[in-house]
Length: 388
Image 1: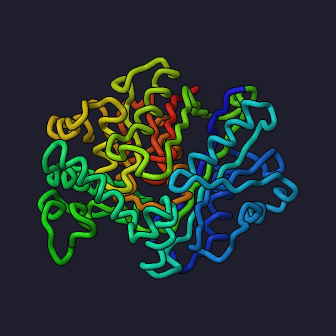
Image 2: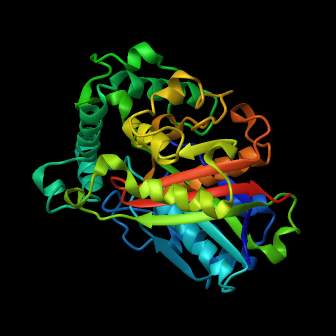
């Protein structure tokens, strides 16, 4: 039985001192059930995407979702973690349960509370999603890891600092139109391309504007089996799903080749029976601008070292032949780890249903979603289309 998204919710991302993790989770869950028009007692299983890792003291969070509605009590609930791809991993697990016939209705919540600890502690928690003995233990942070990847790319294909600035400027301009985005400010190319007091170098060659934001946030969606899909006013299905995991140690692979994302995109597009240029838009994982640049090449929009071209010719901008991150991406929207993959699917479903408001891509009928964990280690690609 194929799974279909029939309801969803999305909280604004940002710094929310007034909301703890429980509040983020329960608000998102209630919103998705209400949007789907489903009673909580109809839910067969719950999946929570969340990294945690020390952002909050609570290590056992799956059953917090039950507190969204008393009728969820006794419902099986599981927390799913796959680093920054925890949200997509939770969706994938729920889809697997529906396809296996173990559930007809699934509730998926992605949530993270990141701003309750200090900046250095956030950096430490995220760094522990690397291969610790070789990377975090030797002082590498995730900006440092992606800075190394950018250095490798620049070493092969020349200095692309301006290319990264174009990506940052594009996504910040897109984020202005996104009511859920943490930063709704058009920074402009010149600001993003200039090292300054307000845009310092974080991990050369990555500047602050090349790095995604630390955020609190949550998003949720309801999945139903194909046998129930026609009972809902709109249903968005998975034309294809792919997961590819690579080695965790960067020492065992060419991190700048993005081979895991490349394989995930190839598998998903092949399964969907379409090419990348058949997509109406894509929401992709720009934890750092170099990740978006490498994903252009991994998804087949450009050849190795040629990703800059799709910026220069307008392909990935609003109005281009394949807008990328019309939401503003992680760069402007924010990156509450466990919520990110769910957010991408929710916003893509809204696009396909013509409900994206100022973000709407005209005539959107086929979406590509790419959520990545670590340095291209856990890679999930979905190809989405509307059933009705």
